[in-house]
Image (tube, rainbow over all chains, first blue to last red; front, side):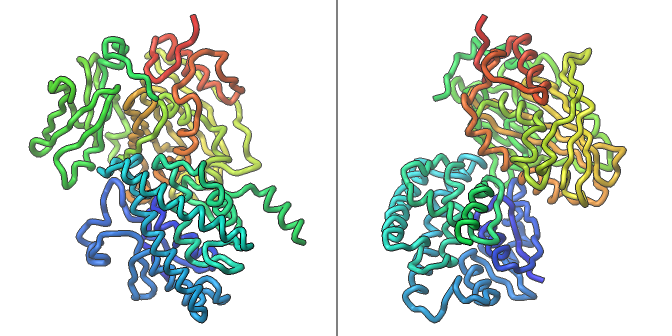
Length: 222
Length: 290
C-alpha cells in the first residue's frame, strides 16, 4: 500500500490526503513529528528525503518527494478520468504546471507567514504577507477573468485539475498567517467551489462548505 | 491593538507565579529563544546542559527560571508558590509529552474557557470529539474546591474518536479542573482501560492581553499508543480550535455577567469568570463594571 510521510498541520501534506481521497486511493499515513520534534530533519528521515521536507510518498518502494510532483504521479497512475492531469492537451498541461509552480510561491509566502505566527519560525513576517498579497492579487484577477469566460477553475477547462488542488491549501489557511482574503472575492468563490468537489475533505483549520447548500445545488441540477 | 499596561498594574497573583515560556525541545539545534510574557520581551539562553538564563529585554535583568515537565518556566516577580504539581507524571505507565506549543491571537483566558467547553465538540471537532446529532451537553456539577480550584465533575459526552487509540464511539467521562487563572487540565476515560483516565494539562502563556501561547502537556497511558500519535492527535484537535479562537470578539474575556449570554452547558465558564472576578484578575480580561 502507498505510504504517506505525513504531518497533520502541513498544507502540502493535506493536498495529497485530499487528492487521494478524491481519487479514492487507499494509503497509510505515517505521522512524522514535524513540530516540535523536527523529525523531518532527523538522520533516519534525511535518508528518505535529503531535503528534510514533507511530504514524501512511498508507493511499493518507489519514493517520491515534492507535493506537486506527487500530485502528477498520483493523477497519472490513478485518475481513470484522465482529467486531473490531461497529458494529451499541451496548452492545458502547460497551464497546470504554471499554476503548480505558482503554488510553490504561495507556500514560501502564505505558509511561511502561518509558520511564523503559529509555530515561531524566524521569518520576515511583513515580507511574507506582502508577498502573499501580491500573489493573491494575481490569482484573484486571473480567476475573475476565467469566470467571465464561464470557467470555474484555475486552468481553462470545465473540470478542476491538480493545479487547483496544489494552490488551495495555503490560500485557505492564509488567515492563520494574518493574511485576509477579504479583498479577493474571486478567490473566495473559487475556494467555495473547490470545497464542493466530490471527495473533498478538510484538515484542521479548513471548514467544509455548508451541507444544506450542497443539497440545494444537487436538487437544482437534478 | 492589544492594550499594554505597565507591570506595576499586573496582578501579584500572576506576576509572582510561574509561567511556561518555551518547550525545551524548541532549543534543539539552537541555544536561544525569544518570547514575550505579559508584554515583556524575554530572551532565554541555554548556557549548558539543562541550565538556562532568562533575561528581560527592557531592563537586561535576569529573572527566575525553572525547567520542569519538558518546559522552561519563568516568573516576572518572586514566585509565591511552586509550579503546578502533576501526580500522573509520577506514573511510569504513561507517556509524558509536550504537545507542541502553538501561538494564538486571542487572550489566554479565552483559551482556558474554550478548553472547558464541551458544547462545541460536534461542530468544531466533528467526527472526533463529537458528531451530530449527539449535541447535548448532559448536566454536570461544577464547584470551587477547598484549595480554591474550579472542578467540573460528572461530565460526559458522546465521542466518535475520543483519543488516538479509540475504536468506535463511546460515552466519555470527563473531569475538568481550573488550577490557576491561566492553567487548566482535563481527565478523560482511556478507551482501552476505561476505569483509568488520560490527562491533558494546558499551560497558557499570556504573551500580552490579546495573544497567548498554548503549551499542552499530555499524560496518556502507554497501552496501545505511541508517542508520535499522542502529539498528532493533540495538534489535530487544537488546530481545529485555533481559527475559532482567533475569531472570537472581543479578543479579551469579558467578565461582566451581562456581556455574553450563557446557557446551562456553560456553567463551568460562568464560574470561571466569577472566580477571575473574585481573584481580581483582569490581565487578558475586560473588567466588569462596578
